[in-house]
View (cartoon, rainbow, N blue to C red):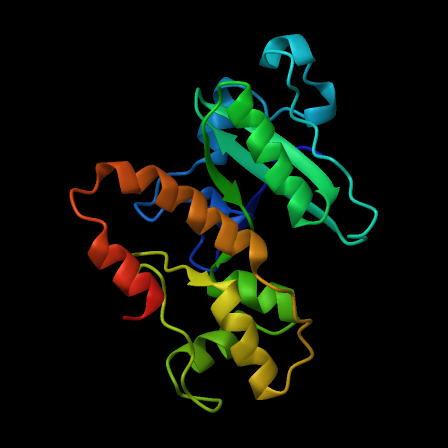
Length: 207
């Protein structure tokens, strides 16, 4: 499986990435920019010789039957498509990339969603979801956008899906492990830039 540059038409006539994780908080698109320069690689097709002999194929774990598919963005403007059994195999792929001298930057997990994306996932209209988001309909308490005030606002599916289940919609519960792993990857790259890490750890641990 490879990452695609498909676009979904927005209600305002503009075009947005079909996968909202292709946009950074500052609005820059990640995957189209990467794939314009170098198509995402299938781990199975990357020769070991290109990666210092370590390879990047994620190890399938028979004890974790649920398959996971994501795109791993690494240094050097490369995107690696990873399809494996379980999040442990994704972690194994990250370690192999690091052993090959690559620097994993983020996982594209599908967590960033627009109201249109939410509507499409649950089979409702965008207007219905919009009314929930502003508290005009529904029980209230709809999760806030990740980038409030922006022209195109994104929401976290990890936050929206529990709200939808609480409302009574049949939305499957999927543990947001990949979303958490993506945040952990980004945190690893930020820590070396911090003069003092105590405030960050206190915030993480709720102290």
